[in-house]
Image (tube, rainbow, N blue to C red; front, top):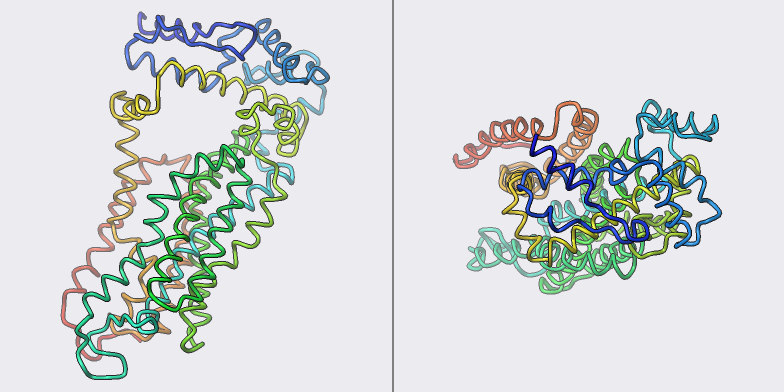
Length: 482
């Protein structure tokens, strides 16, 4: 009971000084027990309007509308805010029209009935995910020929000769660095410049920049004359990959209504797999073009970046980003393109605004960046989430799946198959990954992410162990593929 009272006090300690523009978290409640504090703050962020009365919400909205020049739509903002305050009893909100009532009621049973502006945003974000997958599979085919073309042969013998290759080990390390370059660029540069780019250029502007960083380095890779040039272009490509991976999914989530946000978050992996499939198809399609095949395989990465750069121009900007910048009128115009009715746009606009005000108050209360970073490990609830995310992401990198996705061509050739069979098998892998990714989208909400993770981790272990053991056996004539 005491814990419940503490949490209610914390939730009720959001005090007003002229509307939600001045939300503060009462400092006397910050010494609440860690678990109670976390639960109370979580409830505030999830619905900052639920703990306020109807009259308080109405006054807050009037102040909000007056402050930001939206007095002409104050009545519909109030209706929207009251619906957001207690969604299950939305029919009790006065002055709802029949069309508005039907639109709110249909949000769950007909959740995929969305306006064209939202589907355009989803399509562009899906292209961004496909670009990510395509970028990763270019070297899958190019690895079979670019080392010889750029003077760093990795085979045991010198090309077109039976002489032993004295620099094979050195050249293999160089090839490994070139293959790792995109991920080095993404990890050490791309991800870290994402925040300032978002702040200065918005979500759309940042995604356009990522498209450029994925397009031009791909073309540069195809035109490289030395391995150093190829290394530099792959590093630049990694910057675009890091930016895109940290922006497009956020853009999609911020534009999406709550009813489909979870499914759309999972769809990133689906379209990433689709990009892997398209990339492997491109590798297979140009394999017989002679000495330029590796150039075409690396350069083909630019193809999906063109519709990404063009399409993002026509998408509505993230209303949440506009609200962060204080451009509330533009946020409402953007929200109108992303929702079926003006009432739904008004509801989500004010609800998002209220959440942002609580988050700003928490940032002020919790101190600087380093203090908040430390809370990843000191707050029990957050520490458990951090540990789980770390284990899952680390396991993904070491379980072997990425070796198959990005280097299967080399693996099959070293196992004795022809280049054609190797690339065809890789293409089949991409198709299977894309098809079965849909299983996750349609079942993750039913089974839970945790259950999916541990079950499929065990499956990976069982499937990768036999080929890993078999790779150590000497190859015998007549037992090779292709």
